[in-house]
Image (tube, rainbow, N blue to C red):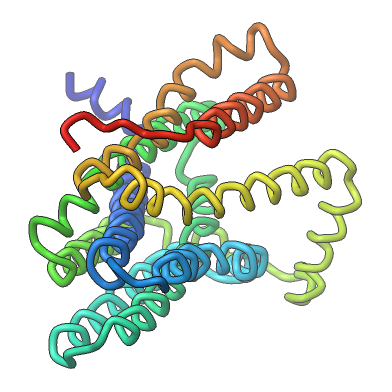
Length: 325
């Protein structure tokens, strides 16, 4: 039984890195779901500024993924990934603690709280753009080549499970303990993540790239030229950008639709948020048999068509009936 358990987690280092990623993602997802509930049900509940506030919150998380992520990967190539991951978690812990102290002691008005939340989201998302490529780089050292597909599946499955849990728990935490204590839960999650990563062995000097390396900006531009010069990659980038645009609109509209149109409680909104990763969990199970009948391109197109048709069907509903409301 012990050997089977050890075999499942591949290695000691993989176990700690896997747990660190899970805790880091938990803190990130819980905070993002808590912020939306905080804005809609408390800070700007009856304000005409609410849609703008929600949009700014979504943008604060999304902007680093567009502007920082392409640069972070090239920067991580020149650093020790393990230290980058620990530093990213440490920055997020410090970021949350500073906001918690100011929020608890300063008596801020809603607009001041919003500015603080936006800065918190921006720093949190920026740190994540350095954490994620560092984790992917270090996993190349930790995981044997023959078990990389298995490890990727386990990581994706656990990440989806964390998404379900955190999406449901974030709004509930806001109701149970309030925003301040919900922030401290994020501090605990990121601190434990850093501790797990620091507990790995033999990875301190892993993946230190020896010269020669292209200068930083030359490396970034070379990657961009390669991606844009390849027709398939260019088409994929454009398609994913359009998908990201629609997802950004959906993220803003979903909370307003759930709270203002349907009149949902924070608990019920948490269930709505959890539906997205649940769908991802189901897809992770079904994708292999699906790909036996369809090509990767056909499956991708089919998934986008399903998403678009369901969204259009919701848009066509003119009247809503909600039992007991």
